[in-house]
Image (tube, rainbow, N blue to C red; front, top):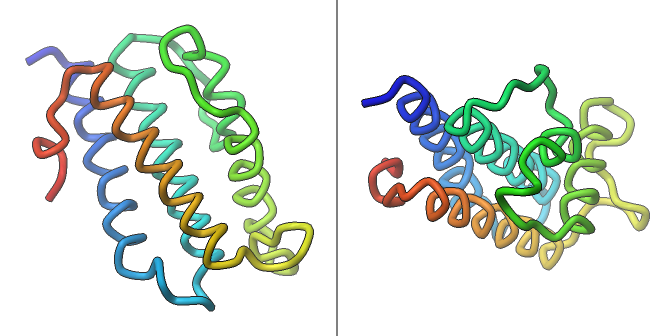
Length: 138
């Protein structure tokens, strides 16, 4: 198997782990910021799988918008959702903000939307790379 495909599979397995983590906590109201964090991680790792597979050079970053710029001709993503999750992730890196939205901590409904967006992104990347999701899910 091609080295880039192997690395893409590793990124997708890591993204799948984040999705699994979300599935355990998605209904826990005080962990909605953690759902946002793992949603961002799922998207970031899915993007990096696509980047790796396509042998696109990229700088080391966690910024989803920067990563997306390198693959926007390969995958179509809702940029508004992407920007929101990206902002929450960056803000959550600083203790006082904890991944807060303008109205405070994400609601359970917000968390569900983040999870669905992350899962949809993961699914799109798997489809683009012609990888069966079951191949990367544990």
